[in-house]
Image 1 (cartoon, rainbow, N blue to C red):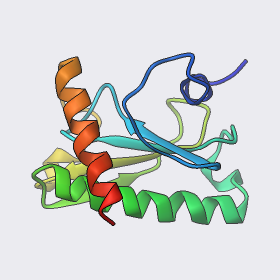
Image 2 (spheres, rainbow, N blue to C red):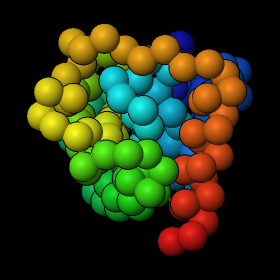
Image 3 (tube, one colour):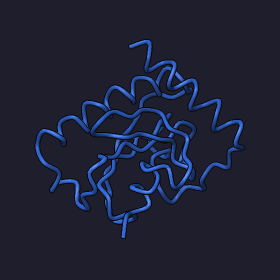
Image 4 (spheres, one colour):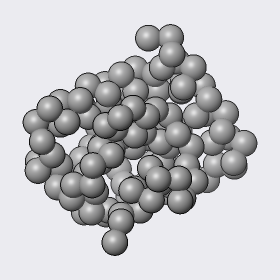
Length: 133
């Protein structure tokens, strides 16, 4: 059975897409730790990040870097942190989490509750900043 992320890539589940090419896909986390929290995933369904083929692994992280720069321009933050946990969904993925201080980087913090309009506006700002790179 396809992972939830594969179903998002295939359009079966809606998302607030930020970026897509032939190998990776990025979208806003719908239960964000902070404003601008995004995920970057390989289109190929691989459970464990360190099982991702080298070339795709490199592309995944270079794309994550590019998206993080767009997030920095789109939301107020000190920097964008990165996390790879890998237990919550059996599909390799990178979390990009804007932070102002160390306490902001915790998955146990209360999640933000954004409206659809707020998600759409945020995704649009990030996409525009991606185009400007």
